[in-house]
Amino acid sequence: MQGLLGWGGAPGATPSSPGPRAKRGDVRLAILSVVAEAARREEPINGYQVIQQIAERSDGAWRPSPGSVYPTIQQLQDEGLVEADDARGRRTLQLTAEGQAYVAAHTADLDAVWAPYERATQRATTGTSGDLKSEIGQMMSAVWQIVTQGSDAQRKAAIGVLVDTRRALYGILADGAAPTGRGPDGADEPDDGSL
Image (cartoon, rainbow, N blue to C red; front, side):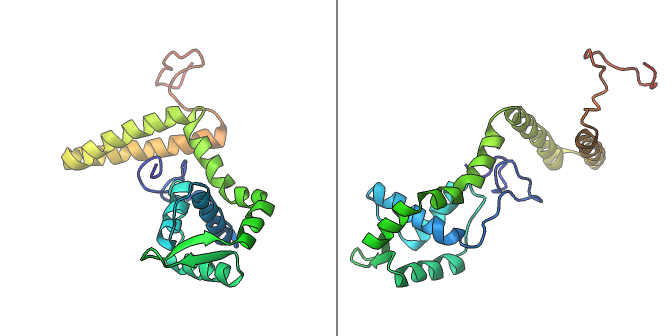
């Protein structure tokens, strides 16, 4: 899943508010975790695939750069935890015996690297956010129709609707109540402000 709304960010995040962020040392633990998982599946893995697996495991929220992954792989090799095998025409990685022991002794640390991404995915795909996702998707479809096929006047009107919607959503967060235009019983409230 490449972000729930297509922008490749963390589940539940918006383009301007990224989801969980990697901390110092997380690249090292993620590499060890991904290489260990590949070994359990008896599949070879190279540096590029490590980057892909980290991105996939974090649901696209974390895509470490080659500039952080490859030096960390080299450091893990220098420490004797990972070794490279060039025999198959490409450089594949595997845990050494010392690396396997390290992974076995630090499973909680390895699991903790993925926890923020798993929580974000869970929040975005369960409970009432599933309903929100559906409504957001439908709204984005309508907005896209206006963008691609609407007149200038329709686009201007859509901007007004979106501005009002954004304000209403922030109002919900601030007040804790939804300004829906409906009373507590679900009936429409009068527009004149009287109840």
